[in-house]
Length: 135
Image (cartoon, rainbow, N blue to C red):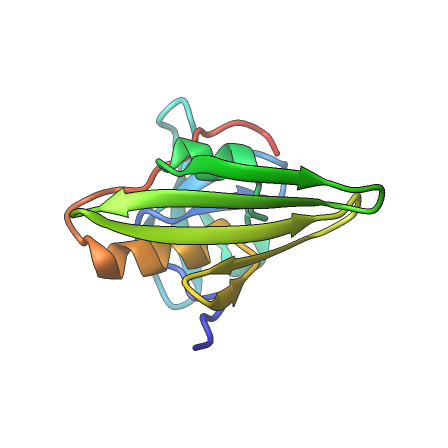
């Protein structure tokens, strides 16, 4: 399964060009309405936002729990789990100094919006939010 890294939905969290984590409030053909942590809304062109890379901290904010951590000299492996309606879903990541590689339910993902989109399919009634801090 392939999940497009640039497929955004309302509620997805992305990175503003200034470094702030913002949420998508409205999607238009040429622009997107984003909301900052203080509630300020701003309409920006698509080039002003980019996907937010996955981190263990952001996954925790979304409700994942760290199940296992294994460190070696070159990278750290993480196993995380989230329970939705009694079913367990796993995320596995290899974190290097300069990049991360993640898999969620056997699908390679690199960005928070990809995981948010898959979790929304599993449970459309819940928002999987992250904090609006600078990343």
